[in-house]
Length: 77
Image (cartoon, rainbow, N blue to C red; front, side):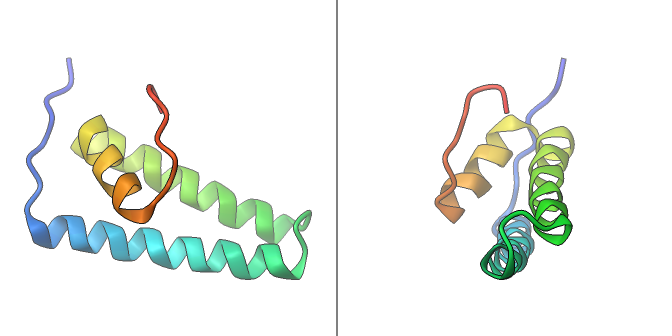
């Protein structure tokens, strides 16, 4: 059973900054070539961060960061 972590504003801000950086990198690679390995790698990095946030801080924290970034949120992701 996973315990949901309560995140302070500083931690949320740091996670949002990291997410924004990965999103900008993905968008830059996608603009160059949507089917390149670099684009796929950037996309994988974004997914890995989301899963890491869920594992470390709990699903609620993952949803908070995703919502702050304007990402679609999916149950169980």
